[in-house]
Length: 458
Image (cartoon, rainbow, N blue to C red):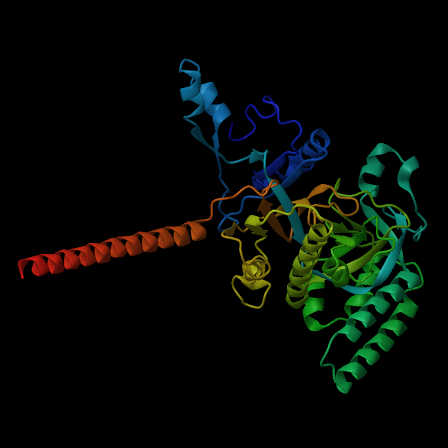
């Protein structure tokens, strides 16, 4: 049919959920949220994934390329229609968004790894919006404020307080994880017990509502040197997603069970030095009073565990589908879109770590490809084995990896270069064996003919 969106939706196929791979330029980020919301509104059952085009340095400008049949058709109005559609012209853009719309016998599963380790306890938001000077932390819901104030207040956390029940539940999940681990000696157990005791003493001081910036400064002094160094550079806060009732509170255990992420991690855009409030990028999220949140830091070791847990949960979901009697086609390909801060920088200098994990969990996949992006696009939990988990919306993830798994819906055979080479080698071997058999048979016939002639001659 077509490449790009030219003619998309004009020739039936309405029963197929569309899949969009989009690659916007960095300058398009101002319009990206509206674009993603528009795609989700127009195609509520569709899927969107991709990455923001990256550059070799901050001094260079990204370029995106598009070979669109619609462009070709517009530029060849006087040509035959078939020739116009078959001769796409390349276009180069410094701003905008290019993409490919897929439909038909294709199923795409997507997942996203955030690479963020939770630190400290679980908190509840008790005030949103910036606090007026001298008013403490009394401001709550800015619904009745004017529009100008509300636009900034709805993305701002004014004060938080420790959620003791959620924190205790989280600690219980970590204890279960420790009990399931092997090889812990007595010294490690004592160290963990001492750490929990210290955390309990710290949490006792967090029962009073505080501005999030003040609580972050208090928490930072209890962290390791590496975690402190990261929190000084960037402040990450995760807001709890809905649909967590009855699910494992521990983040890694949730992912390993295929239950999806508990928190959506975002980087704080600005902080109020006077009132200690923190503000996310405007329009990215609406903070509500009573929402749970916690602090996060980037950590390579945790990121490794997260990637492995994410793929473990994916395989469990896939196995569950098989046991339920559903037809699960073999995986035909996989794409990996990591952001520029991942790769060997995050995984301790080990190159190709994520693609290696993919190869381990998908040993029969003939192709793994992708590129480093300035940000990845998609739903946080994607499809997780074809089944959406919890509230899911398309969004930009500034530091993450997006995994995209392709397969057929109908178990249709697919072309595999590796299998094609094997088949070609087998065919050549069979042909050589047949040729050798023919030569051997001819030689045998010649021998018998010679013996017959000798017998008649004697």
